Length: 483
Image (cartoon, rainbow, N blue to C red; front, side, top):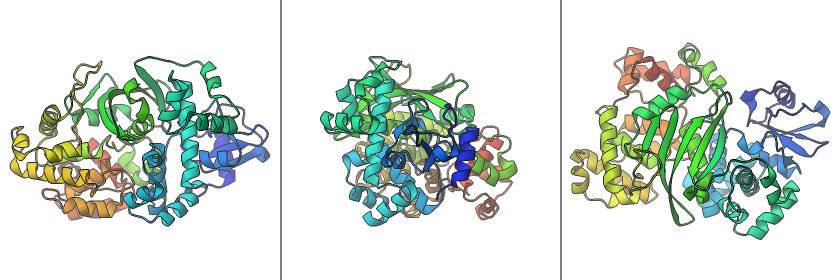
């Protein structure tokens, strides 16, 4: 779905942040492409060419602006099925999805044919998935060269290039620069950490977002204090286990979040940044949401739907939270992390463990989980859930087929509509999820019938997940309870 070129030029002239990341503008006379919020002088209309993606602009022979840095543009949220598929594929590619897997494997994971994936992606972004992936690797490398002190060899590997020679050649060909030339720009470099920025479309209600996450923080794994979100990280990259920590805080006066990662996560930068974009819902388009929700969103126009840094972790927390308070669920989740997770040294008090992966939980005995205070029915539900995730039968990440995933979830023991819809909101990033049986939703609506709540929520489609957040916020504590 392309935006009219005249609308694009008006947005460029106004430097309208609502369009940041929606399109990119290339200037014929300079050979450079920019974000619509670029602070440079606005070019003449007849010198502008508009593209739906950075990859399409580079395919047209343009190189990225060094001032507005197209690699920092915020992402997208979409509800249309075809656009959701294309953007889910883009998100996987941004996170290195084509580094470890072939396109066919990615298509199979998303439940579509290779041909359909290619066609849908091309219609949305104007280039093939492979061309898009190459551009994203180069933009990530540019970002690492600009923002970190990593050696060029490490930059090439972290960005997904198998050969430093290939990386150098492509960088010179595409950007007309030697990689080392970007090192002349001022950077903040630390031997033990890496610093990045993530952009979003304002407004962003950071304090309420943190309050939601803080109430649900898993002891030893997550912590929220003084306006900063911190957590431990454990993931695998090209068969290598990577563990570390991160911290996220807002940049005063700018629509940016500052991210600090431990240097141990250098090989996983794209995946970690992608997960953070989902966690903080940085692809949200607040204006579209506010228009649909109307009066419901007036009090808090920057309210987001918190995602999940790890879908399996969120699923375990959700199962533990059924029919008990948020605080009690966090206590149990903390015990799971302490008993089954790996110890990790961090510079932050209270962050001591990584959360166990699905394979580790699936292999644990029922007695081990039961000794943590988890009731027998929850133990069984968690073990079956863990096995389904470990075997790849269940994918809890944005881009997974929503209806199929909901059906798979509810076919598991101990998981009903509330848990499935809650995970659709957070783990799948589905903006139209609606847990109609949620205690807080019913209370805020003054209803006792989930069917009646669904009927009233029809007016908020396709942004019902955002309506849920506003309904929870209308209650003083905003706590949800399980089925």
